[in-house]
Image (cartoon, rainbow, N blue to C red):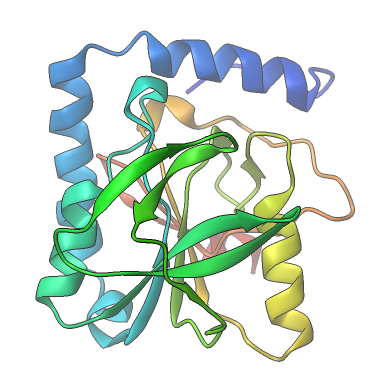
Length: 201
């Protein structure tokens, strides 16, 4: 866990954590990503979920890898959706087993062919993150995509389980919160499943 003072800005914490993650050895990154995948697969909520929205990992940034996870969802006959940035908002794209990807300017790889969907009744949304705390505070990349995405779903009465995937080294004592920040319900690391709802109770 990074030892940060409350006075440290979200941007400063983000920079420090991004560097720590990029410094990870490739084999260790894959091993710990596999541990996180195995923990996620034990969750009852995931087994019950029909529609899952999940990010596509960026390997060079050492995000928790989701490539094998996407295939497992398909094997389990889930409807799988990926984030796609369309004119400054995040929408959903369908994913099918074995589908390819191409690079995208906003960051995450884009499925090819791209099949956009207006589906929003997700049971679970799995998000990338740079840092987290045990109350569900999340440091993202500073663009606010997921905050707006969750806000839009909530306004429609849709409340999927919000799951963050992270390595243990990305935990901080407390994430500085802005009024528009949307909290996570669960964070899965290579060591444990953190129930943020209980921590906030």
